[in-house]
Length: 168
Picture 1: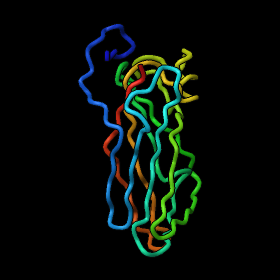
Picture 2: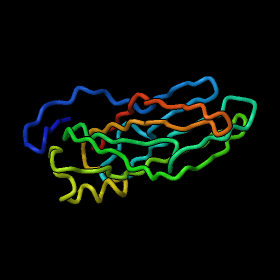
Picture 3: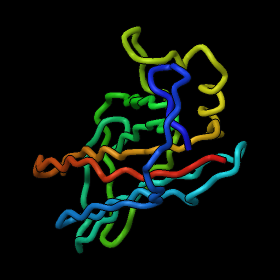
Picture 4: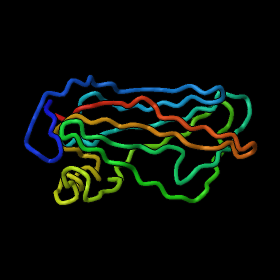
């Protein structure tokens, strides 16, 4: 693995270990982010899913923006962070006792400004990532969970430990 900083050609070995799942426990919920694989072949779509499980014995209604989870991507090889886009309507989702809801990862590309290193929007890698066929390298995906219990207004917000996988 190599790491490139700020769009330069300086490469250095990556020392981050691949980790394909992470979870967080609330009293009422558990949340897990998971990659189907530790290593994907170049051209193979990445498969990442986040699951929110209702551990209670009652239906819970949550309120959230476009999704209850945001997924940020970091290209560890090129040292570039992609944020995530989130639409802002208030949506409510019901989760029955013992049931789960899932969100499948999709690359949104986040945002770009002139003061960020590199310029990922001027090459075809962004288009490939949009189809989940990432360029060769090591990637980190971090889940940001954010929702309210609709009935009580209690907020649940956390950042899960990131998962890390490679594309070879």
